[in-house]
Image (cartoon, rainbow, N blue to C red):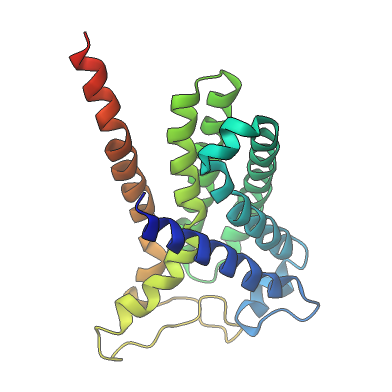
Amino acid sequence: MHPRGTTFVWLFAYGFAAFSLRYLLPQPPFNTALLSARHPVLLPVHVGTAAVALATGPLQFIAAVRARRPQLHRWLGRTYVAAVLISGSAGLGLSPSMPDPVLRYVFGSLAATWLLVTAIAWGAALRRDFTAHRRWMIRSYSVTFAAITVRLAVPLIFIPMGGAHVMANPFSPSGVSVLSDASRLPFMTWPLNLVFAEWLIRRRHAPLAKAASSSV
């Protein structure tokens, strides 16, 4: 990845991980009042472990750590996988409580995909197939990073609309149970992260594949 892209990931990953810790306070933010009331334990578990995944994920991609501190790399990987498994499972438990029926599917599929790609990445590491492991870890962290890109999508979608659409809060205790199609859009952008991950994987591994084919 380009150095600017790496800086973007690191800044937003650690900034958002720190910012999300406010959900662990005794008085949660208003915009999650409904979920907090229904799931006073599950929500902070989901958010807290997601913050751990956001923070430990970038460290997995530092080549110097993998080469010089393999034991540290393995423990960071175990921490990341454990955080994803806990947070993703909690996310599956939270998704049926979404007031909007479409978002129940959106968040449920996000959590299920997160668990699946991370489990595959971990399995590849156990088999010592490190090429596949790196590829699946890129996919895994792209889904982890959806916690950030979904929120960044809000102004990107609504500013061009000239303020004609107001972003509805899907977690509001106001009793609104169905969102407008426009209000759902930012939450439905998370698969684009996987599209970007596939592009990045092909871009990174294409030179290696070309070199291997030319040597045959």
